[in-house]
Image 1 (cartoon, rainbow over the protein chains, first blue to last red):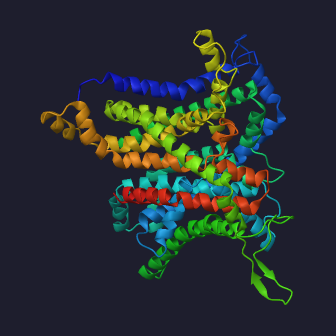
Image 2 (image 1 turned 135 degrees about the vertical axis):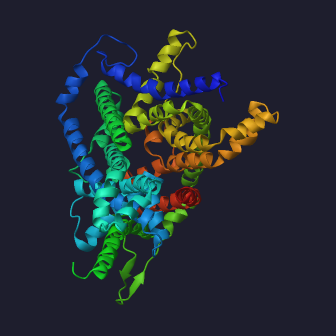
Image 3 (image 1 turned 45 degrees about the vertical axis):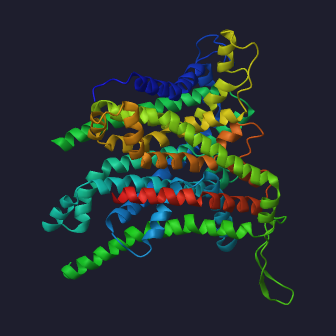
Length: 269
Length: 303
């Protein structure tokens, strides 16, 4: 298989160019002094200053980060339990329904998830009086629900991969189920838990459609602000915001890779 | 615990119940029940008020509880050509987008699967990385590229290839570019997963038997990567049918796709029963591909 196929490398390069040139353009334009995307009038940080002074955007960003942190944590708990149930509990009554409910949110169009949750909240409010007002709580519940599916898939596939004999050995040596879980299972699936949490966090931070349906007057998330700003036209402030997000993602990724390397090195020892 | 084995079995059963019950109840309440409510509201009448629909169960003047079902929304959906057109257009756009994704994604997945093993993870990571940055902001980049006073037009003008700006943004082509750009990782990952498992010995055998590389690809690699092709196409096709953001921001007024029509019906016309009927119809449209995808996922889970 040493024969080189030059067109393959070319296709790969073209693919990466397609993926990264638009992102590079956003970063470049965020430092452009001009408002226009087609003329470069000099290097400037003015859009970053403008972004910092935009109270609406900063407030929405803080709100979005809070919702993302809470819903990622909720989804981590529920998704880990669900992944565990699917990977380890074997047959149980209602397993087919459970499996379908866990997997469906992965492919469900967002408009349907958003609309159905909103109608649920309205119906619940009519019957029970809760939720009295839609806002942060309802968005968080909606995000937990769809992110749980992603965490469950990650955890389930990690559990399916690793050697159950480790757990069995611990049981044979007299460890109680909880001890086995805490000392054997949990450390082994920790990387999957970390990536599941990060995935849920990112999905929540990025969601426009479901948040728009389930939000109320008081709660405007970052994507909602960005979306209504984009409808009015592009502004370099938005490019600056994009650049900050890209920088944050890159830093997290480098950290995750470092940690992953340390973890896999530790596992080898 | 002085109960010994009995207590441990009982506590094991309790733990099992908790592990299962918590996500089960949550999903029943916040995933399944909402769909039943959507179906119910799709069958109610629009009304002036909060919430803007009439109850299905009503007391008549003789104090008899009656069920008032209204199929008006579904009738409108079928009679008004606008909605049917939108759904057919969604299927077409999503189908073409999935094919385009396949055309771009297959060579990439193939090249990564053939790359030296220590580089594959990095190459895959580079495909997934854009997915972690904001979806909206990536769509925004394409507005900057495609708009009349955008980067691409400026480039073509300065090269003298065109004499006046082309209409690129707010076209169906722009929608395709947006969908392929945003959903490419969902195509490459399952393709890579099947291509990486492919045994190179099979290709060598084909070569030994005199097959040229292209013929070997057509008769060996392509059929064996079919599960990945199907999974990737489903992962692009299903969300693309219900996509709202891309047709709204990159497509013109003509790009009325299912997700966008539903959004407008809900947020602008405030017709909740109609929006619900559209959601039910969209779900019916997608039930076959979703079931196919779940069977594939279940098979992979078992393998």
